[in-house]
Image 1 (cartoon, rainbow, N blue to C red):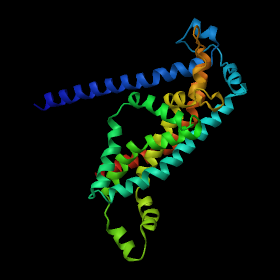
Image 2: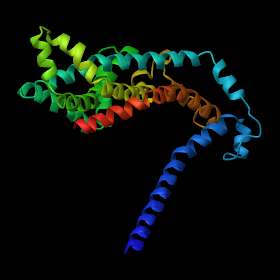
Image 3: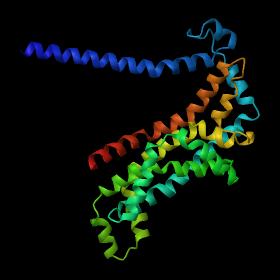
Image 4: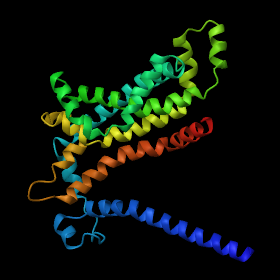
Length: 281
């Protein structure tokens, strides 16, 4: 009996390791191709797409960084990402706190459910009306894109933060109110500190989205080339009849490095926020 149980356990471990290995290959395989082909010329990549480069050729990186408009697109992407994060920090916790502490009122409960409906609406359904509205408001520019990111981040932000705040005990807030603190002081001095793990998690997840997003910048900034972001710049390596994929891979890798550094620095906060949220839930 014990032998059969051990054999069954061994079989599950082997299956789990095989699935884990397949997942690693799926993730690391494309990264391998991006890295090795960024060090090849287009001719060398054509001769051996999967083979290692014969020499470390940095000409692609030199050409990319020497492009006069490249750093402009880096600045545009950083500006939009930082602006979007500021909107997330200003809007999401305040709205979530107001809803979490007033869910017993019909108005706030309706607002909460209305915002959560956004989780079930595909972006393809709203992208044309959004573009039309932003055109009528003359907001086809980075400011309009930042406002859109702030609004669209509400669905996930409110979903995560409202439940997190509701799980926190209210005794600390009541004691602070007895000591003379008003609602803003309680929110700023107590609530923001308590929700920091989940807030940092939300900020990092949204930063990854803003930095790598292609569809919204394409819709909002398509006619304003001076405001293009890195994903739109990378799309230029593909033409109707050709695709300079070695330069494209180089630009992908250069664009990934800053946001990967941000994710690596904040990974422990993501794990802590999600774990703490699960425990509180």
